[in-house]
Figure 1: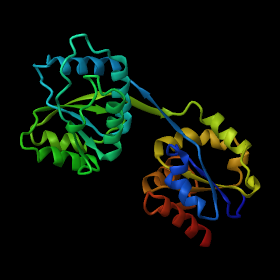
Figure 2: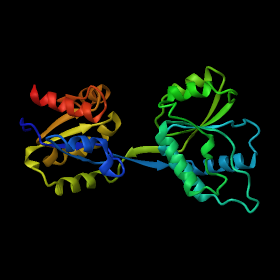
Figure 3: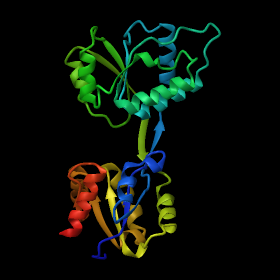
Figure 4: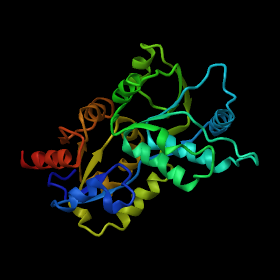
Length: 285
């Protein structure tokens, strides 16, 4: 492996859409490195029939036993499942009354994803009511959302909780301590991208900058690191002239202790600025 400092940076993450607004690519555009993102994960929607049945019953007002007083959504991915269900449901000729339950969300990105559903399908009774989307700015993470719910004038008794396949117990723990029950429903799962091998090859094949000068390979999560490593190791153009960077301590530990990799740079905070500072520090040491 070359000891010279690489001039290329392989960011093992999906770029923002559009890529021109990606915060990592924008930061590296003003640096000495040439950076590119290659997506490593893909999301599959699951249990859409179950979600569809719940939304139909909420609109009809037919959920009595185990009553649902609201919905919790913590990611834009879960909103994709909601949108898929709304697109598949056709309002009956009797034009049922729109669903009137609050939707508690983490962050503005989740709220905006729900608003897009409403703007696209505002006539559907299954679309989220913008006036009932709560939290957002006041709830940037799960703990803050739990505290936001607990500040409501009338506490809900049971909430539908739309989840993925990897969830922390922060929110359920806080709410259950205040006798608020959750009905979890997994609506998406994340797995390694089936296109990663081809995407990596296409990226390196078409790369216009000095490939012979090597790559900084930046890992963003333990699970995705384990998935992509065999593909990286099988491409000598990437792996023979490499240095390895981790976005944080957890990923660094996984790379070193579980995958046996030498890690040359670790970001002190998981941000573009933190990553660039880590690369600069590693190259200057």
